[in-house]
Length: 142
Image 1 (tube, one colour):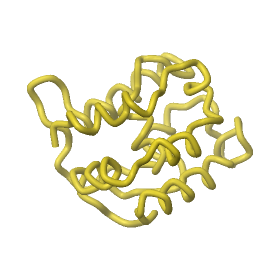
Image 2 (tube, rainbow, N blue to C red; image 1 turned 120 degrees about the vertical axis):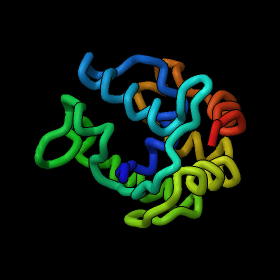
Image 3 (cartoon, helix red, strand yellow; image 1 turned 180 degrees about the vertical axis):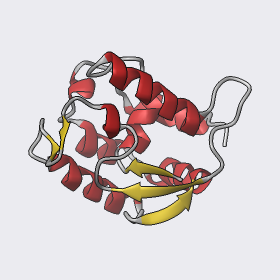
Image 4 (cartoon, rainbow, N blue to C red; image 1 turned 90 degrees about the vertical axis):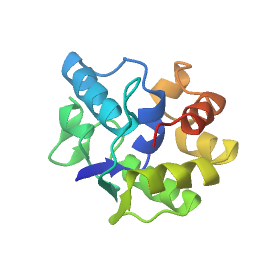
């Protein structure tokens, strides 16, 4: 079962091959392919545990320490919890991948996206846009 941070439901959809290190990028690409699928192949159909702590993506991040994310004094936990509430999701709950993606597509608004993502370095670099995210969700394979 994959463990996934709440905000990674957004990041994974818009991932564009950039990251903190080569190891991080390779790991992120594996998780993205697993969740979203590849051309001609569906994404995962297994269950996911939604969490507000380091997940499979974070394991390869050079900023992860025993104390959590070194970049933001663990504010990302608050970000995950706030995003879960805004989307009507619960952390520590197990969902099917399809159920999670349907819920995000149904409940995500431009305002929720901006609230969650506006402080992110990838957003600041112009890599993330609400319209692109919603297009990815509408065209998902599961």
